[in-house]
Image (tube, rainbow, N blue to C red):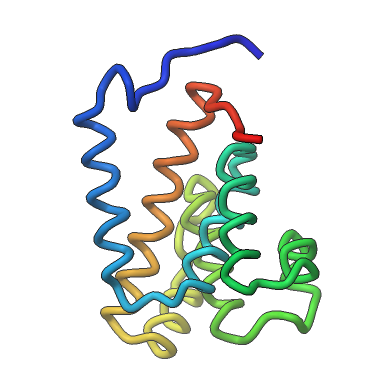
Length: 146
């Protein structure tokens, strides 16, 4: 893999803007489990090795099980995830893969009914933020820490 610039060095102000979103998410009502499921699943879909590595480590540190992480790619076919988590994972997939159908009306209605306006909005912002981080890390070949 070729070495590329790292935006946090060349454009630190842009990185500060991204961290403003992270700070917002830290202050949100999103549970740490929900945040990490969003981050891992979006990163899997985007094939971002840096973010998959980072967020699986954070999730494990926060008490997530290895089994649930191993089966996250097959979340629809397992009983390991709650109904709320399944809605969040569906939202994550539909927003991340927005070029397919976008957030469907069915998923939107289920999410609003389950989470309400504020939590729904925070889920969307978490999905948008990790997708931005994925695009930065993939485009710059962000190296994985050992």
